[in-house]
Image (cartoon, rainbow over all chains, first blue to last red; front, side, top):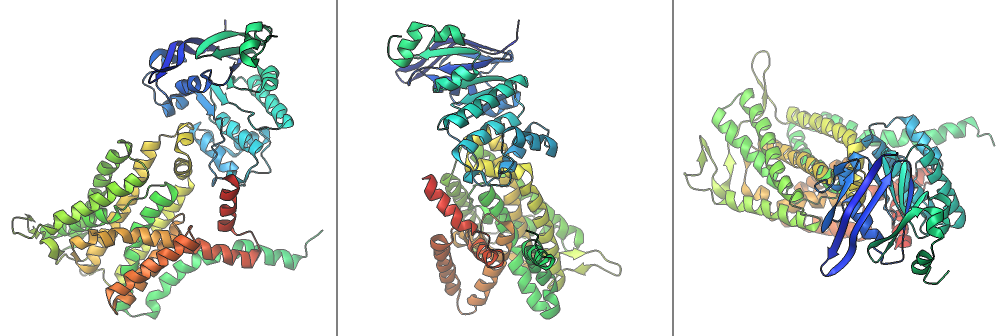
Length: 237
Length: 359
């Protein structure tokens, strides 16, 4: 049986009177590409922020590699082996593409030129190596974000809407990139709206609805469920 | 198409050799200066360079790390007074003066660590850091200004209230046949060598992953944290380093003039490093050094006609910079000079265009 990397138990988050996340039990095992889907307002972003440490849970627990994260600060979670690609590209406009990756690789204690060149090559960013990241196209910014997250040599990679705003070709190329990362031994958890992308990469899908875990299982099984189609697409299948 | 050899050479000259020579030129000029002016003038130029350490510290904190501090003169004063207290108690001699300098730096670093810890671990951010550091500076000024009575003495050293401390010994070096006093030309060279060392160290530090992490924190702290960067630790470290450089300026200033008064920590003094660095270009420590030396020299020169002229000029220069060259005067000029020589696009303009397109 594969190892559990991340586990939440009874995870709950309230903002004032609003219960945004309601008792979620959730597990990610080694080697998966897990996609978390759900309609707007399902609680995906809050769920994500609870795991990364941006929000603190009202109740329940989160464990990563068997360690309870209740008192672990966000940057310490990253050092434990989590890595995050944000929804909105937050690249550092004045740093070059190369300097971005240097930052991550330095933290992973492997800033050799060979590793850096391999990353540039893997994420198709060789030509833009010395360009300030602020000048990259939207798609390339998204790739740089993913490359930065990968440069930390994580155990578990979180992707928050990795293909938001991308063209169909870029979405497909990103999907292939993600698949190659999994083949390289990385476990990935993605929050994504784009069902073409989800169908391309997901090995297992979790559906959130109204702050609760609505469904969880292999991709085909989830896609075949009528109730998922109903809440997600707002219509009967 | 194959480029003719002469064209290739001239292109290399323009793009690689020329900028390097231009970067080296100010240092060479500074080293040659005492050969063309008398000892007294060298001493006056040393005064202009003394302030550059505080400016380098502020440029590193503000330009690289996004921490706008009005506290440089607080540490300037702290270190200056410490130098006075130590040397007036230990007496003349090289051991006393160098101990004064080193203890002055240690006290500034300690004070900066305490204040920085309260700021960064107390989650004070942005403009509030400016307010807190300015308050600390003004509180120190007010406190020192009321130390006129004889009860305000540490050992032999009277603090002297608003009149300040005087009579501190200069720096001396032990030498065969008796100690050598560092004054005028020799003091100028001491300050210059220290400045070269500080510049080389800071350039290396700011180009290292630590420096890149500071830029990342300045541009997007939340994103930087998600790269595993401990924001508070990085900010505290650069704050302590920057403030200690402010302390170095203070100790050297006290040594130069053999006096220190509370007005060194007043409102006008506290604003000066910010004006110099903003005017010269806060993102380059080289620009901060040149800009500070030139502006201090200009202020000194204008002060002959009355100190208010210097302040009016500083205000006017700052207004021009804020409106026309927000990145600072030296990047503004060097971008345009580079365009003349290489026809490479002007950076400051392209940044503005980019901001517009992003918004």
